[in-house]
Every structure is written in C-alpha cells, then in structure tokens.
Image (cartoon, rainbow, N blue to C red; front, side, top):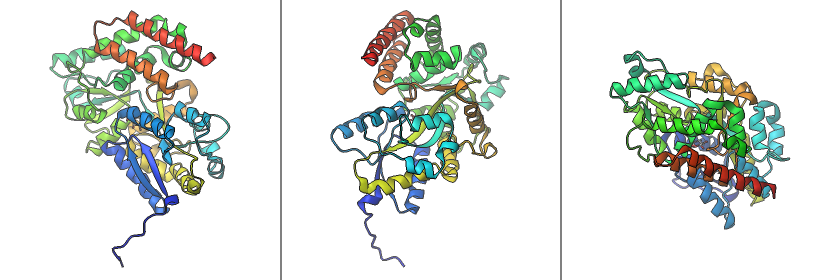
Length: 408
Ligand code: GAL
C-alpha cells in the first residue's frame, strides 16, 4: 500500500555524482547504474555538466574541490585519477578490489589506471575505442565502395563520394573533436610507439619528426571532406548529421554507437563500424572510471557499494551495451557483443603493444598539457593560413616548457 509519503534518503546513503554524460544514450546508461544502486539502498544525486570529453566538467570539479565542496563521486579519468590521488583526496578502494578479485578480473591497463600509486582509487566502468570509423553501408554499397582501410583508400572513397554530391565526413570544429581526429591520424601514420613518444613522453624530438607534419597536412586534406564551413557542433549533433545521411562516414569514439543504437539504428543495418583507416591493428582507448572523494567517512560504505557494483559482470554487460563501450573484465563474453564491441574488446585484449592512450580523453597526460595541445591543433584546423611548420614550432615550445616543469 502506498501512503503517498516517502522517507527522505539519509545523507550518508546519498551520493552526489559529478559527470559529463548528457546525451540520450549516456543518460540512459547512467540511469541504469543509478537504478541498480537504488536497489542497494544508495541514492544517486545527479550533477551532469554538459560538454563533450568533460571540457566543462573538469573545470567545475577543480573549482568545487578548491572551494572545499567536492562531490562524493566523480567521473575522473586517466591521468586525472593520478593527479587527484597525489593530492590525497581520493578514497582508497583496496578492500573492495581485494574482495572482488579486481587484480585478476581486469585488463592490466585498466588496473594501472585505477591504481596509479599504492592504492586502488577508482572503479572502472568501460573501455571506449576512439579510433572508430562509422560508415553508412547503404550509401557506400550504392556507389560500389568498400569501407576504407588505409589513407589511400580514404582519398579514393572521399573523392567518389564528393563526385556523387555526398559529404564524405561528418565532423564538428569543436576543439576536442578536431584534436581527436588529429591523434587518430598520428596513430594511423606512425603507430602506438610514436603516439606515446609524442603525447605521453612529450618528446621534443618526436614533435620535430616529419611524421607530425604529415599528420597535420592530412588533417587539412580531411577538412575538404567535411561540410564547408565546418560548424561547431556538439558530438550528438554530429551523430545526428551522420544518422540523417547528411554524410557517409564519421570518425568518433564508440559512444556514437550507443547514441545511434538509442536513436533506432541497430549496428550492421544502416551503419557499421571499422577501425579508423590505417589503425586496424591498434586500439586508441579511453577508460571511463568513477573516483570517490574521502571527505566524509560516513559515506564510505555507500561509496564502496557503488565501486563494487560498477565492476560486477552483469552491470558491465548491461551498462556497456547502452553506452557503446566494452567491458573492463577479461572474462567478458565477446559472443554477447555486437560486431563493433567485439572488435574493440578483442583488440584491447591483445595487450599494451597495440594500445594507445588517448590524449584528448586524458589517458596520456595531465589536463594542462592536453588543453595546451588542443588549443594549438584547433588553431591550425580553423585557420588555413597557419602552416604545419608553425604549428610544429608551437607544439615544440609547449613540450619544452612542460618538460622543464616536470624536471623541477
Ligand atoms: C569521453 C568519455 C565518454 C563520453 C565522451 C563524450 O571522455 O570517456 O564516456 O562521454 O567523452 O563526451
């Protein structure tokens, strides 16, 4: 019998969760998680900050922490986990990790991210593949084109699409989306070792390499395959452009697959996915994780419940199917995944030699270095008078400065 009266949840069983999941499929995935958490008597108080790749959320999180108002839980990913851990803010989750055998259940790369120093300080949700090419099967088939596998294929396919009056590539000129395309080109051109030299080590020598110039020049060629002018669109709007057949292909992280599926486009019907041309052997990854702030110990049990829940096999399967990502667990069943997810999970499982940590998604370096690189690449992209050589010099200067800082 309902009384129409509802007991307010106790503050220690309410968790404020800060994140940047605001698209339809992202919301659906977060709602699934919040619902499962509610079944365990813990309430998810949502703090969603718009802005793809967490451009806004990172800033809000920083200012909330500085003003002594940290949320109980946050989507902090990649190197940000290490940086917040170094300051001693994060709740240690070693007990949850040991009790649930995280050590043997997760991929080693995922383990390294959630345990940057001595303690486990984050719970992993899923792995996104950033080097994903989405293509419209009907458009390509009608023109007797196969999905491009390398740069030369892509040049041919783009030219034929243009002749047929079809925009080859859906794309936004938002800075993080442009830089994501650029790091895909770096990976395609030169593989994970060079990608790491550049974005993890920030080696000045790597910046001065001719491969950087080639990737920049290709980025500019790709611009001619997009709508002119390239507009500033949120990523769900780019997905909509692709879904509405206003462009034949799209290069984006596989959260776009979650969004397409949610819009009523199942995988391998109208669209399919492949690797970004030239990167079929590699996995450019971003791992989504939740960290907890150790500011109120009464909330500890609720925070631990959330950490335990996100890594369970059933949550991993259901959540990642909506989100477009894949399980962080080595015991996941690829037979239950669609073709896109299966390719991503199997590739990631091949290990660190094929993996490249995404710059844009904070897997490679700290937030300030990443932001500085994004500004330079974006400037090159939007202003055609800026040369590749000038851009190379600017990047070299940034790397030089950050290298000096890191040595101090
Ligand atoms: C990534 C995040 C994804 C997705 C994407 C688009 O950084 O890992 O979960 O939200 O940004 O905003």
